[in-house]
Length: 515
Image (cartoon, rainbow, N blue to C red; front, top):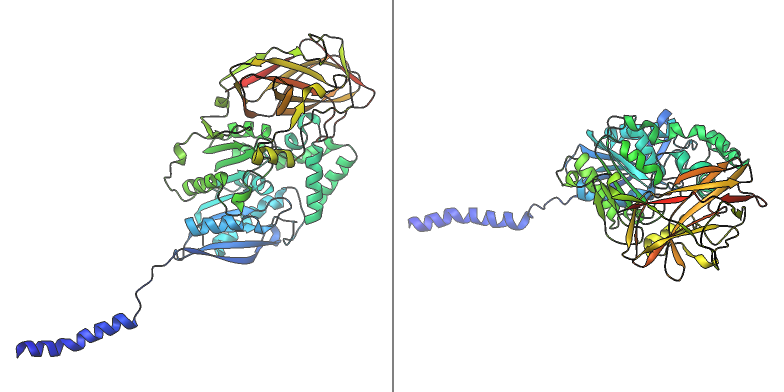
């Protein structure tokens, strides 16, 4: 009887429990995601900047680590949305990808990374802290090309920035676009065309173009120092990661290595095959990419404070320009194990055994030795391993000097910055020389390893020494290094004139850094 009473009293409770289980669904785990909004953000002076704001969902109300990504030259705010969505979804960042001042849907005029454009980065940070759940103690900035340079310049001025990721960046505008007093014409034309097509050039850019068109490029140089992160390197306290390509046709690696060495905080340098913005291109869209994977790890450690091991890795990572895996070094200087002076013998197709003080070439005439086409040649090198080639027997010895080094029977690695010394006697007041270093096989077919222009001012005998662009390149066993110097290259706007000449003396050499 007692048992029956107990059952009768318990039955309603059991039924209520069963009903509750059926009617009330189980609590679902909150899955992290992201939300995207198109916003107007006030830049410096209230200038409206258009932005995609990507915020994490399913991670509470914040505050969230904040990343600000200014767009590249000629590109709008959609540039980083794929990467931003990935960063928000996987790592919980609040990310603002905005169109730089003067381009597309953002107001203002292009001031070439001038004071207003750099200040915009800080104003976007202000907005992100107030409206995008940003954490004032966890802020990073970054970007590609124009966005990268802005990020470095902003880090020198805004102490709130804890970390920077600068990809395909410039650190010195003058060294990038006017190397050794030689205009990088294809790069300049590309930048001018993109600026006019996609934006509204301001006075600085308009005046710079006028000077360039009138062959007064030297008059443009005063705008470079304030717009060059190298001028402000001592003020940068943020952790800086730089990723560039060996064949960057806009911002070559030579202007990076000194800057990297001068940084005093945490730093990372990654150099790999490709051209301007190609090595990191797919990562900006959110696709798998080695460079952007490192960007994420860099921000995770230096912005979020995660102990992910990147701080214990060697800071310099390079991939040989002609293929191979990453190699790590403690510094840029450590990339070079030793430097050899390579004995040079004149390579006169059809005869000759040496170069004498009377050897002379005609200036102003092109040869088959060329540095390639900006964006195209480097991209082919990076994606398909198709270097800029040359058939050395076809180089016109009347318009170019050609020297060959010894056969590298055991192979070698060019690793660092090659340097040339030329004893020259130009006949004209200004002459531009182009030095090309090739790896050449037994048939005389070569691949361009590196190059550099130098403009010689004044006639008469003198010694010219110049660094070629830095590179890591594995020379195959049985091949040799060949140095070619001529006076015309389609990439550049040189000073050589038809009818003039250049004589080369015997006291010339090539210093090769070995890995």
